[in-house]
Length: 52
Image (cartoon, rainbow, N blue to C red; front, side, top):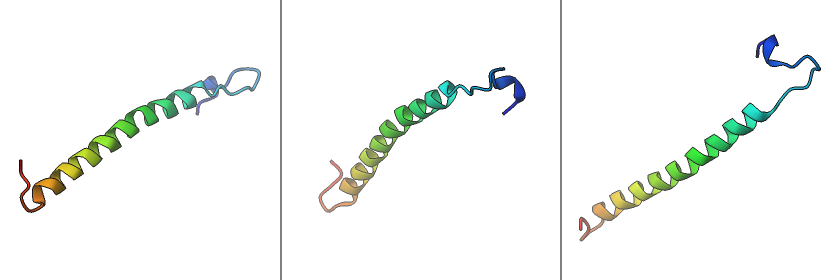
């Protein structure tokens, strides 16, 4: 973290950290669900009588 990013009054702003956290959750949850969907589909295809 550079000295320029800290305001003169010494207060650190947490907005970038909060935005990063929200973006991380917004991307991770749907990707995890999609991965689970792909794994379930692959499992159904491997099961006897699967593939349809």
